[in-house]
Length: 238
Length: 238
DNA sequence: GTCTATAAAGTGATAGAC
DNA sequence: GTCTATCACTTTATAGAC
Image (cartoon, rainbow over all chains, first blue to last red; front, top):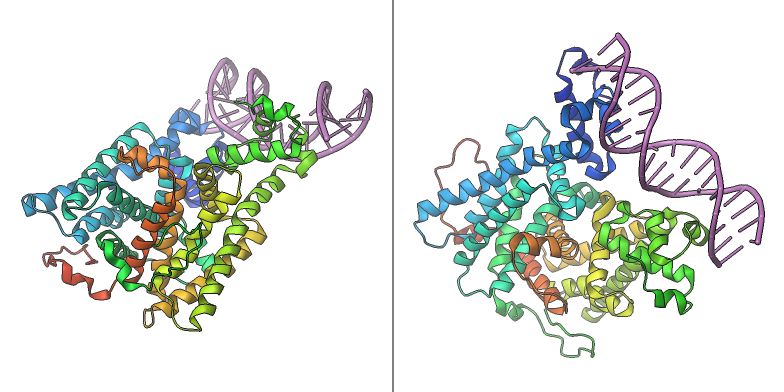
């Protein structure tokens, strides 16, 4: 498939067309599965155009990641800042922290020219592809952001073992990334219909799910009839 | 890096050495980032060996996926069967369903000759790489397994909207896959130490986290002071 | 800024000798 | 079962004409 002829003829700059084609292909196929030729062909440009406009394929990949991830992480920090300023040092409600963590997706997708579906897929690629390897600026932004949110969670859940908290945050991040990157696959596998855009409802669902998981008490076992007939290799009991 | 000379000299069959080398490389680099030459070099075999023993690179990939995923899915179904037989048609406790869902990882990793870390990484690759595309037999097994577990969850959570449940299961699966595939990345980004093997404790943490998220009540908002000053684009409230 | 032509390296696969 | 040699492609990147 190639770019609509209209975009080429209506004089959209080659650089812009390349960027749009790359974002579409990256979100669809993953960063490592798209060749320079795929991009230039889809953009209706010459094979040398990517290297002329972006120096190398790798630079283009990094540019795309930075363009979409950094604004999200920046807005996350800004929202957390605002919440903490408002509360004046007290622990925040989990839901508000989680809201600051995911709502930036909803606001940044509106600022972008991508469809919601493509935006989330691309975001999932950024976070899940390449074994988590990201450009330096993105990696640093992520570290800073996660450090701040981790502290906010710690304050919101005083007394919780830090290692236990880290795992709960890990599960939370995993639920978020997977939902974005693999929503289509999951729908196919479950033959279910978890619905399309708008995504506000999904983010709301995510917040409630994660808040419950993060807040959950250690004595949850009250809910369950403990099976005491465990064999030798049955080493964990919920 | 190449295979330890001992394995070559001690007469381990070439086919076996290729399989071990491939599994190690696939888990480390991902299925799409490993070439036939990478594998044969690591295994100390000739470049033509992969095609001789496995017909093609693609067949080898599918074999590896099947070897590790299918036993896990089979054991999941067997455990769920046993639970449902025991309970005689009544809804099961969430923790028991989740236990049947994740404990097979712990038992299958013991049956395999892989280290825990490698096993989980490889499993994460199977589920996360290639945009969720799996060999036919694996895909079918997954569909069957997810259908059964979805029904079990529905019975355990009567009255819950099916679409809401589907999303909660989606979050659950995401938390699990991400934890396995990206534990190392996450540790790096958080500069945290979420601990290494043994994994029993992690699975226990996962069960409690997911159970709380799945079971969570719709009126969770009681916990939080609702911000009523939302702007026009602030469309979801937890 | 765009094009062609080409370099240099890598890919999976296979025929045929041993 | 293993090896070499090679085929037929594809990849990124670039030099140089226009």
